[in-house]
Amino acid sequence: MRILLIIIISFITGDATSQALKTTFTFNKNLEISEFSKNSGFIFGSPQGVISNSDGDIFVADAKIGSIIVFNKKGEMINKIGRIGRGGGEFTKINSLTLLPGDKILIYDFFQKRFTTFSSEGNLINTKFSPKNAYMKPEKMRYIQDVGVVLFYRTLLGMRGQVKESDDYLIHIISDDFSEIKERLVPISETIDITDNFEVEFEGGSLQGHFSVNDSTITLAPYFFRGTILQYSKKNNWELDKMFDGYVETQKTYIPVEDPRDIIGKGYGTRSNRFGLLAGIMNNESLGMFQKQNGDYLHLGLLKIGKEQKLYVNLFDSEGTLKAHGPVTNLHPGLQKNEFYRRMRFYWMDEQDQLYVIDNAEDGFYVYRGTIKRKN
Figure 1 (tube, rainbow, N blue to C red):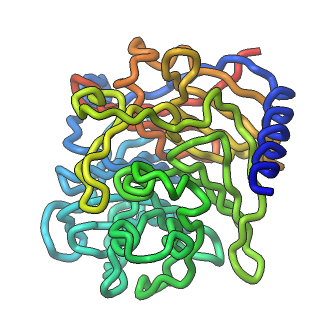
Figure 2: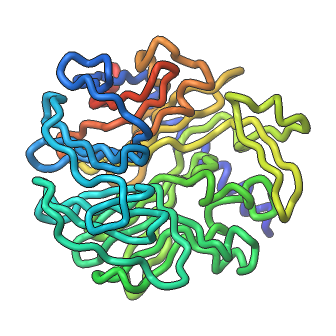
Figure 3: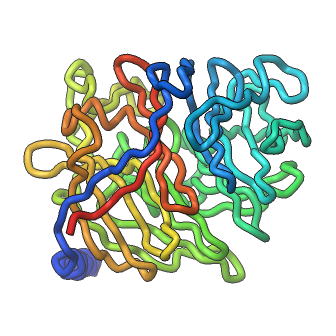
């Protein structure tokens, strides 16, 4: 019965992707912030995230500097929020940030295990400690009205293999006072092959998937991308409601290798306490998941196309049907060099469908703003 089910799913997926338009996309950059920029001239230390508010101001969380660097929509530096320290409004390891109602900025400090809220002007509103005995290291946070702050991370018990895969959750919704996790969803059994030690080891820890939210759904792209996007809806509880079928050329997310030196610039490796030496060259990995203002969903991935990886777009309509797919052809002169795109993080999309990207390039960090456009 299981074999038959897999065949049927594969057949349906093939039909859905074959009917979508195969095309190419471009990234139309309209702003660059770096030490080489005429307007900013700012040198980033270790940017961990970037968001924008309703005025178009840009907030870059820099862990090394211990501050949120604020730029106006022209890329001119206008403020610096916070500093290194352990007092109120100070940070030791900024891990992620997001936007709250009223253009308030929420920042999570991993070392101090606390959430800090500022106004967009930089006024400290409050600082709240995370739940006791909760290990959390969210790379991304998002806010849903009447639901709360949604965090993506895997618990320490999960990474140690001390809970069942069906109870090893990736999405956590925290209470308004940040004192407890009130809801959990997306077990790793729904995102990876739980018989694969490499995927079990890295999922949700070193390698985190990407998600977008609206008033009633959470839409998640697993890091180990097999073409499937998972959408969860809130009924009595959060439930897996839809699965979008995207385009991939191979279902094999990585190629295992024995010599860790072979993975440099191409994949990941570790000596696991549970599994021993693990190393793999990546085929398919998610880089970003966003919902546009017209309801369409945009997935960005680094996918094995032919003999090489390419920055690749899967564009779905609001119901999850694949509309178009294809490579991004003009993002950077380093196009289609494996080591380039893995350094990029597609972090935020604003109300004008502009993407905000952090690029750890060879000559320093850059922050880009721009839009993904489909070629006609």
